Image (cartoon, rainbow, N blue to C red; front, side, top):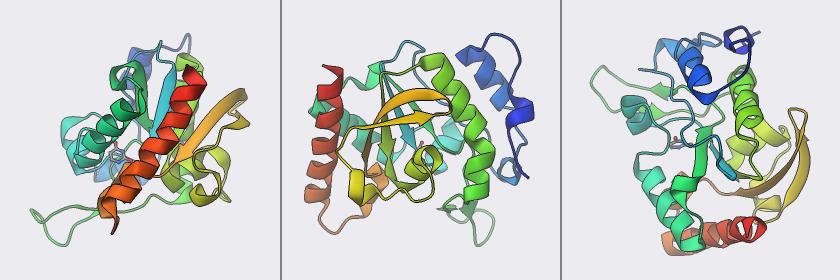
Length: 208
Ligand code: URA
């Protein structure tokens, strides 16, 4: 069974200690092909934690979550909803980029992580929740939803609502929404974008 558990540092958890330990994580096979671990980013004092799926190509190159096209769209949507992107802790359910590549130097195509890989990586997300203790978790898309709320999670059923659940032993409030990449892929991008902003406005109201 794959798990990151043996890589979690002992003693009082801090974000720098977690980030350093996660850089060496070999808890599942994804570390073999990815360039580096992309750990969460933001302050330990952040009131809101945003959870995506896994780093993309740009994130894998730069070592920071949500710095590519989906991240730019997310920042814009957060601002429009009245949430300050610099006051959010941003992370992913899976911390290594999973991709297929037809040939070396060809484009790396994102591949969805499996439940085993999500489960293996969960101790990192649990540790981030322990340190940050966010007032609210914004769940970005189906993978993050399954990682946090279980495999029966359906984003269409619960998006834009406030859920109260026990997550890794902590009572948490969560607002699920679509993944910003799905907005970029949508046939009606404007409508999809408005939907994302509307859900994030629900999150902003919880925090106000
Ligand atoms: N998509 C994600 O889910 N996470 C990122 O960090 C970037 C793109």
